[in-house]
Image 1 (cartoon, rainbow, N blue to C red):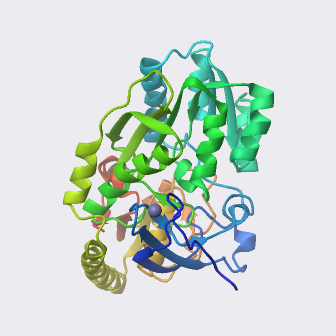
Image 2 (image 1 turned 30 degrees about the vertical axis):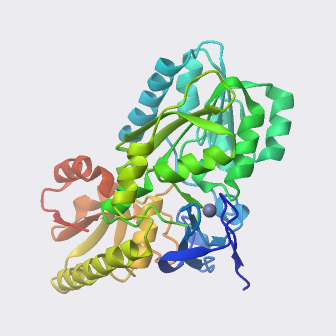
Length: 404
Ligand SMILES: [Zn+2]
């Protein structure tokens, strides 16, 4: 199969891209496979990140088809999956209300998923429109009475949306702007739809935070751009946006929430140079940062595998906790498949009884954990491990927890 590669930077068109991370072959991290399809071969591509030598934008090298990513199989992730995520998005609605009048404003959410956030904004009397690439999510969102369009957002789509919806006061793109194959075209679409002082609000994993924690599992094919403060500033700048606000939060183990407005808006820009200096000081725009980081990760991989094999010998059942997209990057890179992990538990009814891509581990409900006396758990959703451990200890106090 011929691979399609990005041969120039998606931010500055620079031609010199330096490989910083290579995780080997991976399938799509959000691809959970139903039982009748487990014999089908999952698509797999090398998962490689490049750093632009000129502007330092961090991006994935392999171009994959968005249809393969979101449309072949029903997308299984829902915003309202856990109490934790429900709280996060509910608070996001309150946060927006502090920043801008919500009542009677027009709000578009790109990647609106099951419509959970828009439901809260609608309650605050906003006129809302959702856009999502997954037909299945559009269906759920419509059942939640949210006007939703089935589309992959880009500049062309924005022209169609403008005809139907007019100018917007707020456009939201949480954990989706980083999925765009062409973020400049995406921003051109956002620019086209926003009124003069309209706000573009987006949140996604803060890549630098993951690096400092030596985590690599936010890397997957669905993520094209890997956003640092510097990268966010660069891409907004080339697309005629300026930054109104940039704040970190703890979601997904560390996320960055940014508000951008058009450069010609009357609102004033904030200075983020301290954030960029912090990133520079920690060397994340240098290639050897990554070789050092992966030396440590690979050492951890060997220790963990030894531990798992010894538990297996002692007849332990081994379960993974949390079938998020990041779990798939972790399992595939650590080469942990159904031979070693007996099952993964997840609270989402859309994921239960499906299988992980490539590693083919079955997903079950937390109740499965009750059945065993000798059971060891790996918390794959490590960002909420303290909440999960507390919950799991109530389900089965005999669980032995393994750190990853
Ligand atoms: Zn560049």
